[in-house]
Length: 84
Image (cartoon, rainbow, N blue to C red; front, side, top):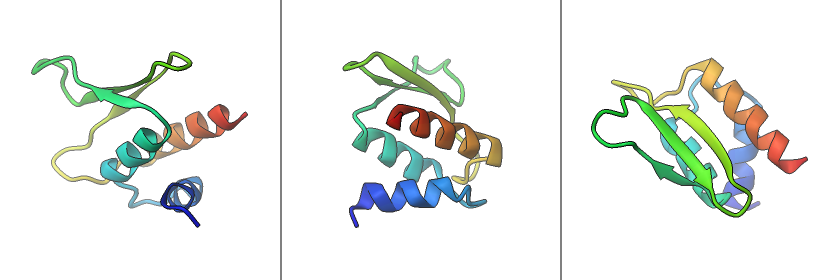
């Protein structure tokens, strides 16, 4: 099983310890690029895929790396929607 498939399977289980790094890795594997709007962008990071102009705003957790459960659910729903 490929790394992206393992990450996707883990994400769909909505774990309480899914990290921002795992989310960013998965989105990058799906063709998305992160974009901060400079130093004033706060903790929101935009992930954009130019091929189909899809975009997702993801909250970068702080001070830790674990995403909140709502953000994990949002990401899982977004990726399931991409799959059709």
